[in-house]
Image: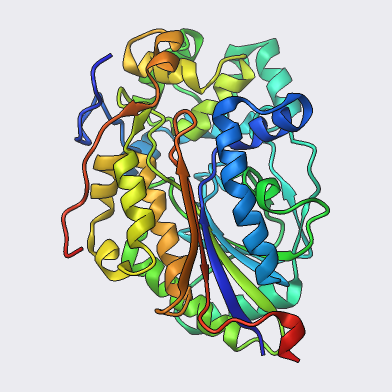
Amino acid sequence: MARIVGGIGISHTPSMGTEFDRGVKDGFDPRWQVWLDGTRRVKDLLAELEPTHLVVVYNDHLNYFDLDNYPTFAIGVGSSFRQADEGWGRRDLPDIPGDVDWGIHLTKHLVENEFDMTVSQDLSIDHGIFSWLPYVLTPPWPVTITPVAVNMIREPLPTGNRLRSLGKAIRTGVEAFERDDRVVIVATGGMSHQISGSRFGIANEDLDKFFLEKLPTHLDELVDVPLTEYMRLGGTEAAELALWFAMRAALDPHAEARYSFHTFPQITGCGALVLAEPGLVSSSKES
Amino acid sequence: MHSPPLTLEEPGTILFTAERALEGHCLNRFALSLRDDQNRQSFLADEDSYMRRFNVADGVRQSVAERDWTALLKAGGHLQAILKLAATVGMSLWDVGAHNAGCSAEDLRNASPRYVSGLPQGRF
């Protein structure tokens, strides 16, 4: 049977992606060099977890979905997921490989557990995944991914409690999959930032560091804080931190925090957290 | 620049409420059509008639012509949709943000990150 081996929380921003491309070509901007350096350990730890599949809880930014129909929760089911054109063309990165068996299984499991997912059979994905992906994996992408998109665009947003429940349902879904896959759950969003209104550029590093410190051991207390409090203190887009609840809830309560990192390159708090399941052994020793 | 206030009031924050989502439906449909390169070219060739195809209201078309980003957000444009428009006309997130903050894009760049402090209350 499949099992969860670890979890990662990580920020995303469009500039994280474009600065990667520019950095590889011409050298990194000093502010983004810090992020590159900080994510080397994430890349190594992810490799050590030896995942064969990732479930990524993310949010689209009106690049695939639009307001004619806006799903609260959607799941990508397909053999590959294209990169969305966000208005300035696509970056030179390969499509993300999917796994139809995982997509069908997780959809069925989530719906049976009362998460009424919108099923996207032709999903294209924006910087929500593509911006951080090359920092932690090298193309051609070595693992398949099931993307789960959460509404962070239009009020009302799902509650923190609902995202915690989603994480728990993803866990039982992974454990019910009849293949010996090793699965890492990734949540991406936040950290503190606001990119409209006169509060544009707000930066609450204390909040970001507090969140990274508390998430491994104080999930329930963080869920009890209304999303509007995260928005008030960290900017409207800090609501995306709620996505990290799904990742944390998908892992064992005693999951071990292996690494956390934070920097503020420009207008988005950029953080990363790596958790590992307790009692983890490498795949070579498992069989 | 002054420190951003820790409130969700306007003009500090322009929330994309359900009411704004409805009001801005045609504007967002138009702006999101610019995710397609061919549409970007059509729009740039004749902005006004392109927007009319999406039933964008007179006043809103005027705001687009004036690059009045703040008015567009208040008229129900979602920032992520308005960004497609900004990108199409060769402007950036910084131009939109600066217009919202009432300063130049350069001043905003120099002021960012705009540090604040504050933690949520709870049983931590």
